[in-house]
Length: 359
Image 1 (cartoon, rainbow, N blue to C red):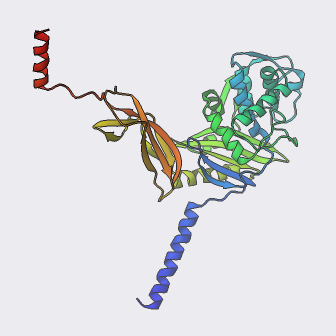
Image 2 (tube, rainbow, N blue to C red; image 1 turned 180 degrees about the horizontal axis):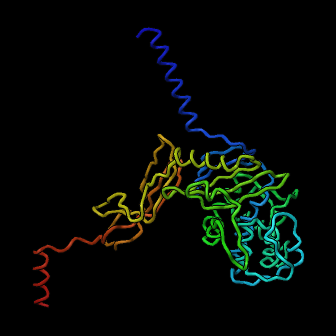
Image 3 (spheres, rainbow, N blue to C red; image 1 turned 180 degrees about the vertical axis):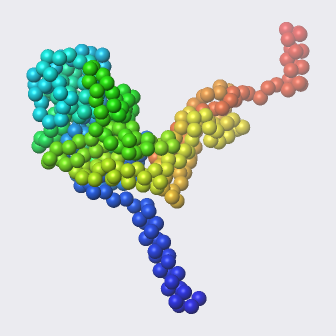
């Protein structure tokens, strides 16, 4: 091939690689950011994800999680003077008024009410201090190793911080709580004599958005933790100190859903293999986000050799899924039908009949 054609081909190949890299990449305006697949926990993008930073009102995800776990939605809460006088964003509570805990949670997650956060904390924890202790205990349970909570609303404090990664862990836990997701994904509601509108614009901007929480203080800047769902896959996006957070979350989701679609390796009841003529079925479903060119490897591990008799539905081992030699998940294996001893043939049946006759 002539030299000039080889040179042109090389330049075209380089351009293609650069374009492909840009198509796969993503950038944000945030000081820290993270994109995570909610079901697997796989991190798809990170930027200063373990830097300890102020988190403002995204704190209220933890407040809501603890309150829903430890409280009762129908409880009547009497608003204290301290709660009503809390500074910052509010649902405008009045001292002495009574509302249900559920109404306060709407005010917490939709209006970002700092007053609601204090009222919730006092009721569920007995005091703000007691409630904050539960918040920190929950953080440890969730593996949030670089987080500390000093209040239930996110007002700036030297002992109040988290990281983009830890906030994604919190969001994963929140998504498992149906009540929290129901409230956080509500765009507008009239409850307890108040009409409240959600501050989270992503609910109308991002397809499949499930909430979760916005935040802002002058020191923390704009903070945002959100979740979006497409084709059964849920992604979590976190940005801290980000002046362009709405657009950045949309870019993160566009990147994540395109570059790391969840590939289903097993469905509940799917036949994964046969041994001794017995179908082995998946006891659960399993999916994992995979980039282009990645494939999951599947290895079957039986507890023991299959020996009759076995009833259908007996657990006999596991299917183990790996990516690049590292295990990423496993599901149980169940027998798909009864595995019985061979039946007696005609000669054996005749012999048994003869024996019975002369007993």
